[in-house]
Amino acid sequence: MFKLNETDDPIAEPEDALSTDGEASNATPGTEVVEWHGPVMVKTDGTATIPTLLAQRVERDPDGTLIEVKNSIGRGWRKISAKEFAQDVMSTARGLVGLGMQAGESIAIMAHTSYEWTLLDFASWAAGLVVVPIYETSSAEQIKYIVENTEVKLVITENSTMRRLVKASVPEGTLRHIYCLEDSAIVRIKEAGLKVAEAVIEERTSALTGDTLATVIYTSGTTGRPKGAELTHGNFSVLALNGHEWMPEIAKTKDSRLLIFLPLAHVYARFLTIFQISGGGVLAHTPNVKNLLDDLASFKPTYLLVVPRVLEKIYNSADQKAGQGSKQKIFRWAAKVAIEYSQAIDTEEGPSKQLKAKRLLADRLVFSTLRDLVGGNVKYVVSGGGPLGFRLGHFYRGVGFTILEGYGLTECLIASVNTVRLSKIGTIGPPISTLGFRISDEGEIQISGPSVTKRYHNNPEATAEAFTEDGWFRTGDIGSVDFDGYVRITGRAKEIIVTAGGKNVSPAPLEDALRGHPLISQVVVVGDKRPFIAALITLDAEMLPGWLRNHNLPNLDPGRAARHPDVLAALDRAVARANTQVSRAESIRKIRVLTTDFTEDNGLLTPSLKVKRERVLATFKQEIDDLYGGPVTRGH
Image (cartoon, rainbow, N blue to C red; front, side):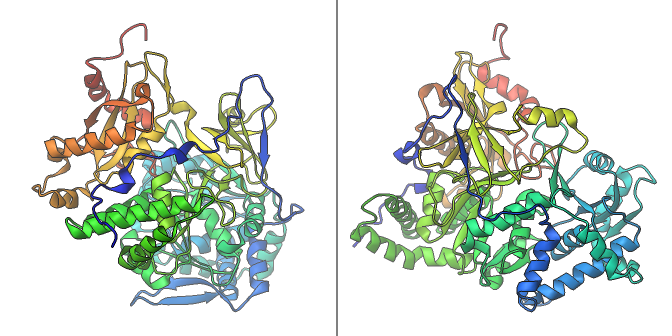
């Protein structure tokens, strides 16, 4: 019998020594900077474009299913072949031309993730247009700036509310057309192109090159006005072609299935859409994450595209549903087995017979249920948009998923990723095929390669600031590359805290460790020019009721819970665990639990769910001063 006496949450336990194994310092001032380069798997001649990727897919397998669209009634999925999608793209592209859109002009899309978004993307590119995504949560000021900065002529919104917002945001006469998807936008666009010959679209498509601008994606902007990264057809197509050879197990085969539910306004989901279509498998969309579990169950994807917060939510929800008593003990015992099993995989000896037997039992009791939760067919989990962390990474690998944590930016799509053959939990993998990495003397990650933007749209000052004299892009992220060529990120350069004692502290490791706790939604570590490190914490309103119930506490709203002694005690324990990962000078000494969360609506979160740190510091200046007994004193 195996003991089931573990009551502590293993995900919340301190990190172990694995966090520093193999770490190499490559940023010694005064020495030559070392470069790492991902191999070039496919040589291109500059003619590859996004429409050619689709054309090659149609040529390889015209009748094979390319996209599945969820039926409006029932749980079934309607299959669309590669040839049928190409025909839909052609008729929509003809409509865009029929509306008067000239090659090189911009079209904006403001909608949730959907088949229609992908259709409009590919139709616009076939017609030689530039697509500009707008987050569905964007403000009037942001919409006005983006539309004017890129000289958008046509906007397609999801619903009438968004259409009214766009109309109210831009001066009259700026736009030629505003269409709404819920008001038959696609049908109306196609009707406008009935007299446009296919030869017109073919001529525009053939005029494209790898250097042709495909899209301008605006950074979600944690500070200041967003910058529009120009991305060309070559940025996408070269990376997609090389990516299929670099990671053939993911999307190259016919049995590959991807359900996109992250925003297509973000470069992460946008590139993976192109990657999937240019491969051999099937793509589908989920516009409403409330239906995500049902859609996963019926579509049965082979790999997931997620941000760490999704994986945290899945784990915390499973732990919470286990409740108290024996069920919770079994779940947490199984979670610990998963972590131990995954860690053992990385050792020379591998998992012991006893550990294999434990995992077999844990699989029957817990893991199989978790795999069924995401459709039962998932082999790979691609995680990006933030650090996943050792414990969470080992947990999911131990459950049976191949964890492929990666790193990317709006300006370069995907920069590095763990692969099926080259993987190390706790890192963001080696540089992806075709891309170069180096670490500056200051510890900043800099990148170079064919998937990196060349400029920000109509913003020469930002462009000049973003590139080194020899043309490498400054990511703003602090990191290192270990002896095996795996990249680690320790934080953002502009977020480094310098305490009154002169200690440099990266807030990211502490914030990431704390965000894994089921009670916690967001964390901002503070302490610049202060005598010690402190933190602002917000509560997760979604997880709070279950946590209170499992701890035999009355139902409280976040405002009252923020003052409850049992909640505060749990947060103190979480902080103590997080502090074990850092030195005493870097440890959190005090916390302030805020009564409101950070959201897009209150302007404290970006659309990609990153905290706007400077705005948080300004909004809660009084709370921060209270932590230290007053404002920063003179001389600091």
